[in-house]
Length: 111
Length: 113
Image (cartoon, rainbow over all chains, first blue to last red; front, top):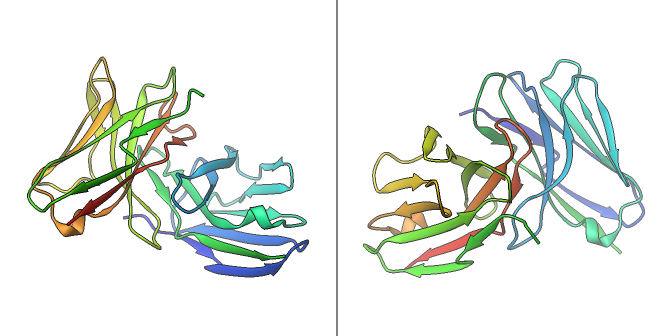
């Protein structure tokens, strides 16, 4: 199946630091979604991107849809302990039905 | 709260039994997706349904697994004759239209003894 590669795989940062993670694919996507998942819960949608080059913010989170439509990044500014979780990128291939999910980036924030 | 509702949250079955997982989509959503997640892994697509139709079941194992989304009532993921390897978290997501953003339920954790 389609592979979405996320990097880094895990991050350990100090509270207050900024975070950057990205997601790459060998295929073109027409939508990029970013989710956060906490233990024992389902993924929660953070940001949705629909156009190449689009830059969208949601509070301290900012995400961009890459120009090539094969990548996206997510930034978190001034991290806080409640940012802890696993962040997934996801999206459907152009003309496809299913949403593929990335391998995830695990974020740990040290107070 | 009109979010995606899944039940049960936890389901324990013995090998050979049947497991039925239910999902009620968000109000107004007619598209349902089922995903499976193993510990420390990402979500793997299983099936995409609209009311009374299976649109894409390319991620479903060919045997023992089936899904439906009837005209009335929740979507059901059914696993017959469960084996230990079926133990996982199963998530349902809904969308108002296809290829739009997905909203997830809290999942059903299936444990097979």
